[in-house]
Amino acid sequence: MKPIHIIGVPLDLGAGRRGVDMGPSAMRIAGLDDRLTRLGCTVVDTGDLDTPIQETGDPGHSRKKYIREIASVCHALYERSLSVLENGGLPLVLGGDHSLGAGSVAAAAAWARRSQKPIGLLWVDAHGDMNTPESSDSGNVHGMPLAALLGREPEELSSIGAFSPKVLPQTTVLIGIRNLDTAEKAHVRASGVHVFTIKDIDRMGIAAVMEQALAIATRGTAGLHVSFDVDVCDPSIAPGVGTPVKGGLDYREAHMVMELVAESGALTSLDIVEVNPVLDVRNSTAQLGTELVLSALGMEIL
Image 1 (cartoon, helix red, strand yellow):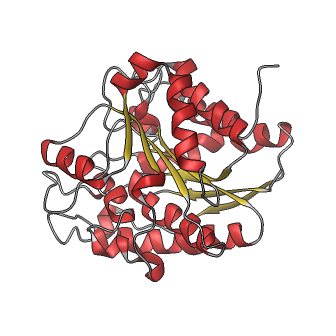
Image 2 (cartoon, helix red, strand yellow):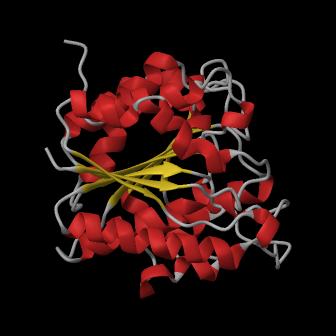
Image 3 (cartoon, one colour):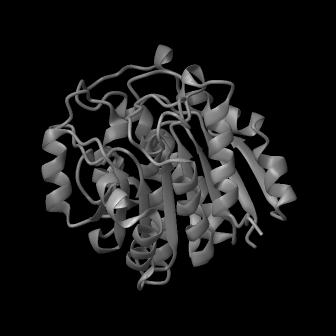
């Protein structure tokens, strides 16, 4: 098993509600390091990246707030994650808001390019995160990283690593989507990415969805990056998120996602994002995030 390198990214500049900057600490408090070690993993915790706070920053452009600061953090994450991958490790990125995906996925894509293959991407989220500054009503950048990874705006994120696009539509899969802005729906349809909405999961079952998703994301790719936003889970099991949406994955469905990722043997890098302790109940969402990481890295029932 590859060494697991934990990288905390206490970033809340991309979110509309404060508190996700405490997400990495909450997951460490939930025992992530020790539980990974007991699972048999070699764990290297490199601490948290330096991240500006809103009180010392300038939101700047109203349609892409704090974009300069966010891009700087994503670039640092790109460098750290790429170094881990190049040295044979698996980056485990703890968020922080989902804008950090512009850095973590870029690193996986850069690593994959060394073998002249794309990276496969599973974007597990209640939201599409494919807004652009022009289509976003809020200007919150955590709704834009996947658009940037596919080569669209904001340019400050799409240019990280000096190549674009980072991912290809044919090997990118969205899972659990249930809350898209009106203009964003058009972006998703036009992008060519594969989408399994929560309705598809209801109809087909999570196992069938994941089997198809993994086949798409691993066919001809150098590996698999999973970017898991805990708001894909129902608020009844994940209350500590900034943008909760009723009707999400239940406890077993969320674990099935990660268990089948582990079975695929293709995982190269993993994000767990949007844990917000300010809104949580007795750290239950961080506990859930920790358990999901364990499932993705091979914890089995028997």
